[in-house]
Every structure is written in structure tokens, then in C-alpha cells.
Amino acid sequence: MPEPRPPDAARAEQWFERWEDRLERAARANRERDAWTPFVESPSRRLHPPGAAEAGKAAFRARLGRPFSLDLPGVVGTVGAEASPWTGAPLGVTYPRVAVDPLLEAVQAAAPAWARATRRARLGVCMEVLARWSDQTFENAYATMHTAGQAFMLAFTGSGASSLDRGLEATAAAWSAMQQIPERATFERAFGKGAPVRLEKRYRLRPVGVAVVLTCGSYPAWNAWPAILVNLATGNPVVVKPHPDTILPVAIAVETAREVLREAGFSPDLLTLACDTWDAPVAVDLFEHPAVQIIDFTGGQAFGRTIERRWAHKQVYTETAGCNAVVLESADDLESALGAIALGLVLFSAQMCTAPQNLWLPRAGVRDGDRLVPPAEVEARLVAAIDRLVADPGAAAGLCGALHSARTLADIATLKAAASDRVVRDSAPAPPPDHPEARTATPLVVRLDADDRALAQQERFGPMAFVIVADDRDAALAGATADAQRFGAIASYAYTTDPDWLPVVLDAFAEAGASVGVNLVGQRPMNYTAAFSDFHVTGLNPAGTASLTDPGFVARRFRVVQSKVEVAGS
Image 1 (tube, rainbow, N blue to C red):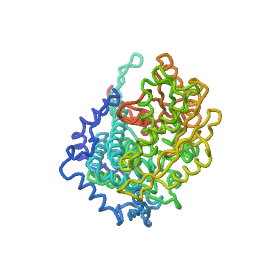
Image 2: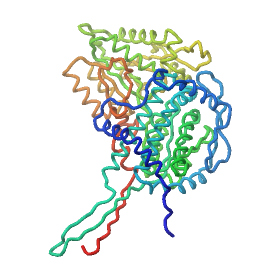
Image 3: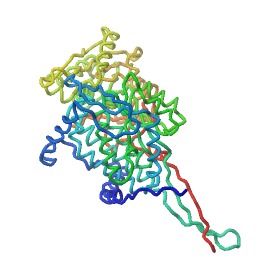
């Protein structure tokens, strides 16, 4: 029986032509690592079509209190219990609940046509998906705000433009990787004294299987968009398993991408959604299915490590957690350095994987120009910098956002009890006037000695930080890098004015497999990460294995199958 022909992908090819220049520019940005984005990073009405902000807000509100309609295969019921961290009110949205086996049967049935589609067709679909997601940034921002807890500005920029950048970065990386392999080639060679042999060769790029993408609760788009798109671009169908408390922004994105697939003549079941609950999780059932060959996970370190070990026979890409360190040895302007660190601790209540956590100081003090500032004063000035940022509850809300989970409040209380008299700044609620029911907490800061720092040797997800005093700067650096290597770090930081010590710092973090930013005091937050320029996660420490976006994030998601036919008469 002959293979069924792939769908007429003329529309997808047209999309490729429409977005080809953008794709090639993104590929160039990946090579050159420069500053570039095609997406609007500000919600300013001057930068958007008239009424876009209002339409996005209205679209979000129209989702509330009703079923989210997705024609998924294998539906066996509904789930949905999201509540806004800002208001405490349930969103009232329910989603289809699917059974794993019939879902994956439908996904596998859709897969062959997608695998046979041209690279251009698949990339055309991915680029069109990105464009439509960009058009939905306002709606997505409100959905993210009222599920993840991000303040609106961060939801628009971080989960909007910046996450779209990451998605485009990964799509362009997939395109570049596939372009290195020609579709056809002619091989001609003489063997001995006979006539040359001529072979017509064909190289087919084949996907490896179904991908399952697990999205995180506090930052749902940042890792999800790259994982979804890089899998689709390389021919692998995708099942998205969203965090049970943060489904809506992911469901909106899946709905839109399914519409694009359908318009291109492909089955929308190439991208599906598997929602679950805390009491009845579905991830393990997905992972165990033989059709699933790729797992993209963002979330807690314990489950991430379990995935890495238990399903090591599959392709596993993780971003989990780390105890990100700051080594503060000296600064031209200590007040600016402490202001940058304080902002990193306050921004989205340290619920970002790049947030600093452990501030390391030499016991003799930190050099501020010509003056040596003792640790107690550094600590007091850091606390004062935090206090200034959260003094006005209205302004603080735009920086701190809301806590994604009530468990973070319990974690703060547990740490406070364990730290006892070592607490140097207590945490307290800071609800904004317009959202008095918001779940909030200002940073808790604890003082530790380098020889007694067990409390700091794990990620404390949320506004919890430590000031750690070491014998000298080398001991501080050694402690920070040792903890990164042993417990994980996604982003590390250092401040020094000593040109002779700077190479020591850079080498130490590199040997620990931890990326580091040095003397960051500019207008951007210290934990800002730029797509197309900054690599995210090294894969060299326990904080994760998936780097956005290096060749290793792409290359194993497809394989090359070759055929060669000898030309008659050669």
C-alpha cells in the first residue's frame, strides 16, 4: 500500500516566504550574539494598533468563568482550579481532561504527514505561530498575571516579547542545524581503472518521536515556547503538560498554534494539551508511553533529577533550580552595586531562575573606592536598599508581583524559624492598594557564616536571601563556586574592581560550569537575560541540562536517513 501523500502545504510555504527575512536575521543574531528583537517589548499604546490593549484585556476576561474549548482527542472530563494570586478569586476556567493512550494514538496518526513535510513548510508554520502569539501579547500578559502572579509589565515583556525572542531563537537554531544537511547530493568517484560510479543520494531528516513539554507555574512561556517550536520545526509532535495552577496562558498559545496547523492543512493534533491536577498528575503516564521520546521539563529540582535518571534512555532537557550566588569583593560605587542586588532580590519576588540568592562577603569587608566597608554595614545598606524599593506598596507591586503559590509563604515561615536570631530583615506582606487580597511578601534576609551555611545550599524559591561571610575573597569565591557545582546555579554574579582578580573570578565560575555576570549596575535588572545573546543554563551543574539555545538543544531532535541510487550507465 503506497504511503499517503502529505497535505498540500502551499500556505505553509507562503508563510515561510513571508517570514524568511526574519528567520534569517534571527539565525544571524544567533551567530553574532548581538542585541536584536523583532517583537515589541513595551505595552505603550503608542507602539501598538489602536485598541490593542483594550482588546487583549477583553479577550482575557471573556475566557473567565467558562469552559476552554479545545477539540482534543481522548477527552474524558474536565479539570481546572486556577485562582489569581492578585485577587484570590478562582478564574472559573475548565479545560478538557484527556486519557493518555487515545491522545497519543491520535498524535501518532498525525505525525507521518508532518515528518514528510518540507523543512520550509514546518518552519513556515512555526514562524506564523510566533507572529500570532505576538498579536496576543496583551491577552497572554493578563492570563500570565492572574495565574503566575507576575506584575503586568513583566508579564508583557518577560512572558511576552522576551519569551517570543527565545522561541524565535530556538526556531532559527533548528533551521540552521537542518540547513547544514543538504536534501540531495550527487556522488561520483572512480574505483580502480573502471568508469566512475555515480550515485544520487538523498538525505531525509526524520523526527525521533513525540515530545512532552512540561511548563512551569511562575514563568510558563520562557522555556515552553522554545521547546514547543524546536520540536515542531524538527518534525516532532508535541504534547504540552502545563502546571496545574498556570494553564490559561499555555492553553491560549496551544489553541492558536492548532489553528495555524489546521489552516496549513495539517492535523491540529500535532500540538495537544494534557491538563492535570495535583491529586491526579499525568506526567509520568506520558513519559512512560513508548511513543514519547523527548521530554522538555521546567520546574523543581527534585522532579527534574528524577526525570534525568529515570528516563535517561529518552532525550531529556531540563531547567530546574540553583542557589545563585553574588560574590561582592569591591565596587567603584557600592551603593549602586547594592541597589542592583536589591532589585534582583525584589523583582518578581525572586521567583525567577536568574534571581540572586546568596551574597558572599569577605570578613575584612568590601572595598568601596578607597574605603573598606565591614560586612555588618554592607548588610545594613542592602536591607536599606530593599526597604526603599518596597516602601510604596503601589510601586512595589510593579516590581514584586504576587507570589505564585501559597507554599512560598510557608517556606518563608519555615526558613525564618530555622534561622532564628540570624534574620537581619524580616519578610512582610505588601499588598498594593488596588489588589488588597494579593498574595505578597517582601524579602527575608538571613546572615550566615561560610562554615555554617547549610540553609543556603539549596534553591529557596521566592523572596529569601542570605548574606554569607567568608574568611577572605578567595574563600568567598571558592564557596560560591563549590555550591554552584554541587547544588546548581543558573546565573551567578560578582563585583570586583581588581583587574588582577577578575580573571580568577571568571575562571572559577567557568570551571564550576556556572555562567557569571560581573559589575552589573546598569539600568536593566541584573538578572535580565537576552535571547540571541545570552546562553541560558550550561548543563554543567545540577541546575539543568537544556541550554537556550546551543546546538545541543536542537541537534538530537532529528536524525538523518540516507538513500543512494546508482545511476544507470555510470
